[in-house]
Image (cartoon, rainbow, N blue to C red; front, side):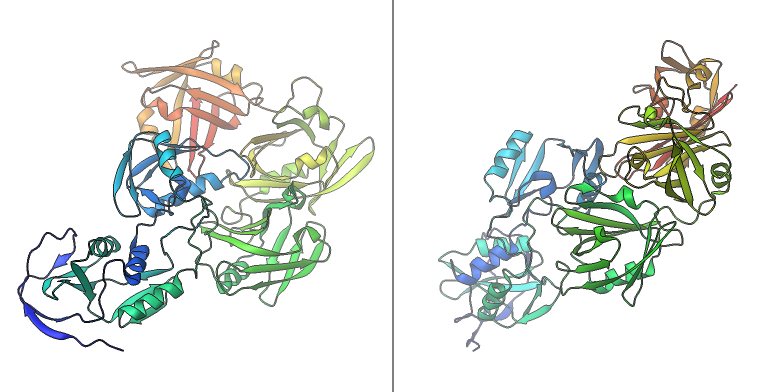
Length: 603
């Protein structure tokens, strides 16, 4: 029932109220309160403060605490990548860097000093990680209940009137933010009471607007909304990756894109994705699921169900591919230019599909030209001349002869016994073209099951590289025409060192993430010395550094320290092509960074 208001008219009294909202500057006629007021320590005043308090959980991946957040802007170093955080959205950059390799060890360094903002909007300067840890220690533990209410928000502006204990109007204010409303309610004491100009509107976590006509209704609405959503007060940045997803979104993505490939599959702590290299999945709108390997077609069903973004289930049933059968929970839909990923979870098990959403699937964008690679592969015998996976394992393949058929099958024959596998091409992760190999689970051929980026193709050599989706480690594979003869492994760019030290070089091309910066190096000559030093000079400026060749000639490491402009070359470069007069290099930055290319030519 609405309260009865007496009509009073007063001039504003500019008292020392400590809040920063907008005040009217004229004589106002306003209804003074009778019952519909906010008094000190009232239930509704407590609920309003809990709803408008500063939510510190959005940056938990940085500070590990929900009772405060870090004042913007600030800078962090995530897995070696500098990230300047200027908005809440920038936190996702750190999350993306951590998500790039799920099995690696993530590191985060905050550049101090920083300022933290507590739930009551007071601040403190923090000068070290130890001080930050101490502040976080005083917050509720991860996942524990706290006082803030995050499942409902106020729609602003709100007009409020402040009265003294004699019902005399002291001020009217227009409130435009949570902080202003929090400060207003926090100033209420035994001598002050506040009323709102009703109706006001509140917003529930699902976007529903609710019109509220008095404080009793407001109290009821806040209490009913308090525990209706996941407030995400834990430190897992991934558990809200699909907060805006819907079943229809998922169905559209899975059915609109074609030729999905398995980017990651883990069941019972065992990585299985390599078994399914070369398999493509197509989700049909009628619930059918068709899987193609180079030799076999598998048929099954799929279904997406759920009522909220937090409980969307993808049920997969494939009779002959039981590793995929489960009622998976949708974790994330990640749509980027040229690459879409759907991440599914079930406890610790994980399934992630990837497609470029064009014919060919698998990421990248469009069908690359594989003419030269196919022509070389399908012509004659091949041998593993080099295989590096944390260590040189080339000798494990010394007895095998590899043949590739145009129908997508391949055989690896040792002691007259063939092992049949499958091969296909697609768009690479770091290069334009990739070669997918799968010989099943028989050692050591199971080590070759992967989607290999193609570094170099001739009729005599095929050099491949793979970056592990688990921990970011690099593997190298080289096929050659001659059998492996022992020693330290062959088939790499074993002549690279000799070629580099034999002559004077120039920078023929340098593209920094697609931006041509070659002009910065015009007039410079580059000399590689046998001692491992490298000197670049244009007669006026000289930059001296170090160089080394690693991974059997597959990487060239350059370090010019801070000497401009050659400090741009400080990296471990993948060697794409080597000849007596030209060397082509490439580097793909971590954390979703761009691709740099560098070409040296002999003068």
